[in-house]
Length: 88
Ligand SMILES: [Zn+2]
Image (cartoon, rainbow, N blue to C red):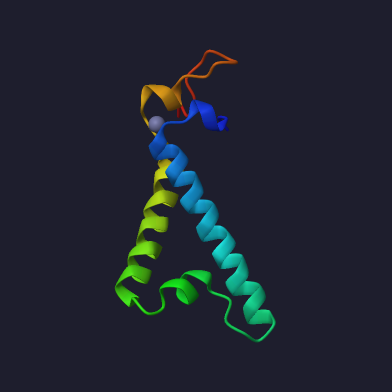
């Protein structure tokens, strides 16, 4: 995994969004076990169902983006090993 300074803004944004999504899912799970609703996105944006849906979609896209990996030069250059990553 690249450090933050080696990532382009897209990768950084994707990483943040995926983490936010993961934390929210964790909260939903814990909240569900506690018998309550802890969906932060729903709490914050519940009044705007469209915006809430868009957030979920954007987090999903960010997840796909991380899965596929960014193809820009900044993300594919590794300062420590000097090789390109994600070569399958
Ligand atoms: Zn990139």
